[in-house]
Image (cartoon, one colour):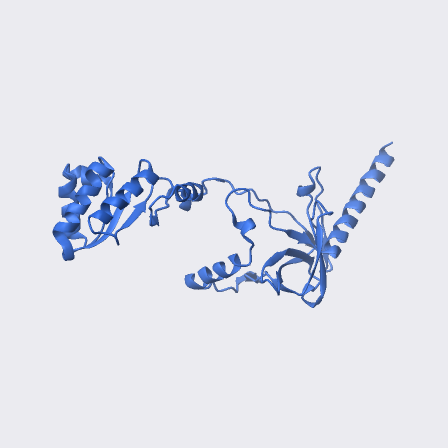
Length: 289
C-alpha cells in the first residue's frame, strides 16, 4: 500500500488494521509518520491481533537512514516473535546504493527498485550511431566502405563480419568477443590471435577454445523469421552467460573492460582501406597544386 492509505485514515493503526482485513498478505509501509516509534510498533500490534487471520509478510521502509532503520526494525520484529517477517526497502535505490547499504550491514531482505530500473537513469540517450560498412554494387557484389576519423575509436571497421564469443574450454570463461570477416571461420582454427582494435600492442594467443557465433537471423527478405524465446528461457540464458565472465568484469565500481577484438584479417582489411583512402586524398591534394 501507499502512504496515502495511512493519510486517508489519519491513524496508522486503523489504516494497517483495515488494510490487513482486506488484504490477507500484508506488507505494512511503516514510514508515514515515524518508522521506529509508530510504524513498526503498529505493524507488530496488528500482526499480533489478527494472528493466523492474515499472512504477515513484513514491513516496508521508504525513507530515512535505511541501514539504521532496518537494523532497529529487525530487532523489534525479532523480539516480538516475527523472525520470519521480511524487511522491504525502497527509495530511489540503485546498485550502488544497495552495495553501500549491504556494506553497512543493513538488515534488508527485499529491494524495491522502481525509478532507476524502468528508466535509463544514468544514460537517457543511447550513444550509438548507424554506420555503413558495405554496399551492394550493380553486379550484386558487396563492396567494403569505411569512415575515417581523427578519433581512432570512431574509425569504422569495413566489410561484412560476424562476432564470436571465445570460450576457454578449460576454465569455461570468456576470453573475449572476436570480430571476424564473414569469410573467416574461427571455429575451425586451433590458435587465435586476439588483440585490442585500437591499442594493438595489447594482444594474446588463445588455444583450446570454443568459438560461439553470436549472430541470429531476425529478418530475412523483409520478413520476421525469429521467434522470441519464453521469459524463463531468456533468464536462464542470461545467468549462463554471466557465468562466463570473470568477476572483475562484473564489479560495479571500476570494472575491467571486456575485450572485443578484431581478427588479423579484419584488421588487415581495415588498414588496407585506410591506406587507399589516404592515397586518394593525397592525389587530390597533388592535383589541386
